[in-house]
Length: 305
Image 1 (cartoon, helix red, strand yellow):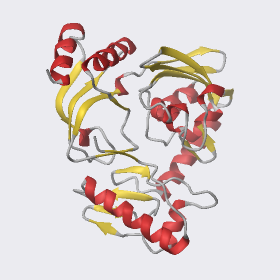
Image 2 (cartoon, rainbow, N blue to C red):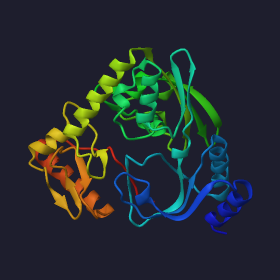
Image 3 (cartoon, rainbow, N blue to C red):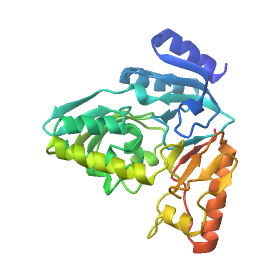
Image 4 (tube, one colour):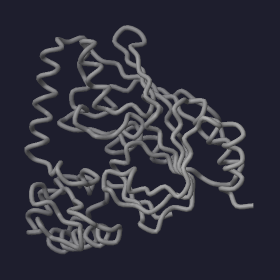
């Protein structure tokens, strides 16, 4: 029996209210708007559904791909023979105690930052313009404008397939530049996280958020589909600056292009394929290394199977 046939039976029997899709195009679930069909895609709306689904997947013999808003993913046009779990339905958040907010993995960072502002809590302004979800932000220690998640995260509750549900402290999360404990444990699933903030004036907080958003709109190609910064920041350099200095702004392969607005972004100008983007990235890496000796590492997560 195929893994998905077994999973279909279990989902129908034990998760009848779960949104469960067959051969779902991943282009609908990534900000690049690229990606072939996932054999199965589920959208749990409660943590219990997610935990049970993970158990069923393990029994069926498939390792799920966990996604949020898909803002850091480039998925193969050939599709994925696996279960994809979209966590964007997990959106509960609350002010749990004092200056601490607790939120589920699928809460968009912008929404969490807005909530903090309304509660008169400062510290998440940097996250307002980051398009991902809290779960993804935890996994990659997302950051912008001098702020990053490790500055505010106090604990994370996650499901580890072999260990069950664990709550980890900030120290245990091993945060680094675009790195966390979950970078080394890709099978683990973030369920929720707690962030500790500081009291502030809502108008001042809102002003800082608006300033960051204005700067983002002025400098980044938000009008085109992309996965944000394509390459990690090399030590001692900025990827976008190196790419620009090598004269690569506007370099195009098929429907993919190095943004003319910000060289650190590869954008989908229309109809870009997975192969277009990966070939463009390869050319950029080759040119930058040849001219500067710096090796650029992808920040975007490339998923081919």
